[in-house]
Length: 431
Image (cartoon, rainbow, N blue to C red):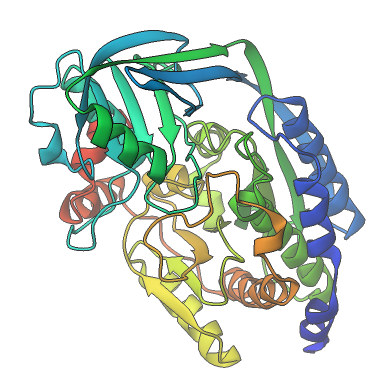
């Protein structure tokens, strides 16, 4: 009965797919590399025995990187443009807004080039997303936005701007390393600097992979990940490892053959540019047909799996029960997390889990930098994680019907957790 565990712990199916994805290179939303990754994932799912594996394309706002720079009185700084920054140049006095907490934008920022850190101090009660910092700067009148990494190593961070209504942001946005950002502020705060971004914004096409495992029931557990990645790195942790884990779990579920409900596997494109794939999918499904969503994003960074359960008791119980049974370390966060592909489903009241890795870092670690590469990951960690995720998916598939939440209750939870104001600032408030 438990032979699938040994098979998973010795399987190279997931790891081989991880290598396949990172070796593609650029998997930016709407790029040829993203399409290659979607097709490869479809084929890999079919190879492990998933049914009806397919890719459905959809239109997306494209964005293609050109050059960028920051011109200062002492010479140029080489940043990287943030995806969906507009092309153009902006000149203004340089203002350091520190950690980019809401209160940090209450200064006079009209026409300024604003610099903010990528992290949030431990004393602050919530994470402040990059896009919230960007739009608070825009609202305060900033002419350009400079996103400074907090991690040493001369690594400039990336991450998109833009909204659903206006996919291309209103002011130029770039990322700089911790070292370059601190030097920039030390030398030139209060002086005029110019931020220049060159990019193209063509119409493009992304896609979503779908496949099924288990009996052909109407109600299903959704097992999800995203396939796209930022163009500056391999996207190993974010999120080739998540998609590789989904594939390994699919293989294990086929091997088990004892599911009480269907598991629908959905691997999204265009997550890194506003959750476009998952928003589209969540709008198309009947919420009453979704037992739960298990979304893998940022796994394999460490052995301890981190589960955001949204405070749904049945999800808490499933995760904790499986972890206890296997004696595997986990951390459970019974809170909302509105920045990954489970979220569009949760916003409509569907029970959703986000599983990632808890390595003690409040930020992204190597993620969203050029250092998000395969060498940071280990086969054993991927295999162990896949065993636990398989157990949770099977537990949810066998569980009694999990009730849908009233979206008003989800909104109230966001308010209680001090997340609503930030979502309103970025245009992401769906209620």
